[in-house]
Image 1 (cartoon, helix red, strand yellow):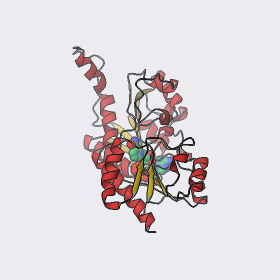
Image 2 (cartoon, protein in one colour):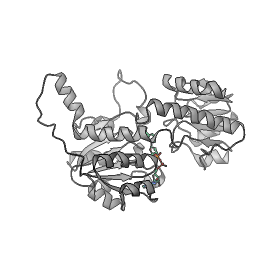
Image 3 (spheres, protein in one colour):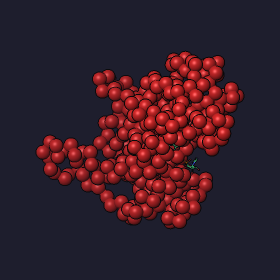
Image 4 (spheres, protein in one colour):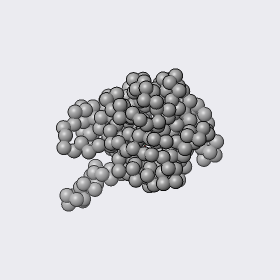
Length: 330
Ligand code: NAD
């Protein structure tokens, strides 16, 4: 198929081209992010390959439809950036990569927890400046602490496994109990109880209308004093100003983010030569107990290989009128 790949970086091109050696599609790589101003670049392509911050709005889908686009192949797990209702109306199929490496995201999640707890970044800066004092670097044992996992699907379950290895007490909130988590000894509780009892709260549920700003001012107030909040799922699960208030009040002890509600304007680009225009993000950067990475939790060799192979497989299956099993239903 003739496929236009939006938001393409050199690493996307490398892994997708390698996977395409067998699949044989015609891939056209574009650095541009897909949105209302760039969607005309999809002309003369039957399929669009998109990533997390591409915006498949009603208008974009309308334009894609007029160009004869029949498939949107998301090279990510989440699909909150696609107007699925409109895609269905226009008969545009949407496929995704539901699992490529839950380990990649889970391991990054735990690395944020450890780095925040043990102040690794601050310690490293100090050492480079010749300051070997330990004041301000006091951490806590993970062993015996309570971790609350919100969403125990593929990623949440691996986080549970890793934290079990540390000897954490594990609580979880999910509408569906994961037997693998139960076998590890995870105790399912309602969200308010999880928030009230957890030293660490980590988010692994999808962004849906019902999970939008799941962590708002009310939720922060329910959390344990000094607790750690980690979000490697989707930015809009967290109401950022409410969390900033929690940090200012000292209610929240630590915040680790790999995602941010307004990340579309920032992440995946080198903006080091520009003035930061996002005041909320700028405020987050002022806290020494906040650690932010730029949506890199997925970014491992294994994950990129799996993403590329599954994406190309999804496109081939669509072309051959076969179900890939990775269709997103509207
Ligand atoms: P998954 O579908 O396997 O699991 C999601 C779980 O969340 C399911 O068990 C589901 O029942 C649960 N859930 C749904 N609504 C919920 C709610 N309101 N409260 C609590 N639980 C709820 O998904 P996954 O593969 O584990 O991925 C989880 C999320 O991680 C994705 O939705 C995606 O947004 C994010 N993600 C981030 C990165 C990254 O690089 N930062 C990479 C991949 C995925």
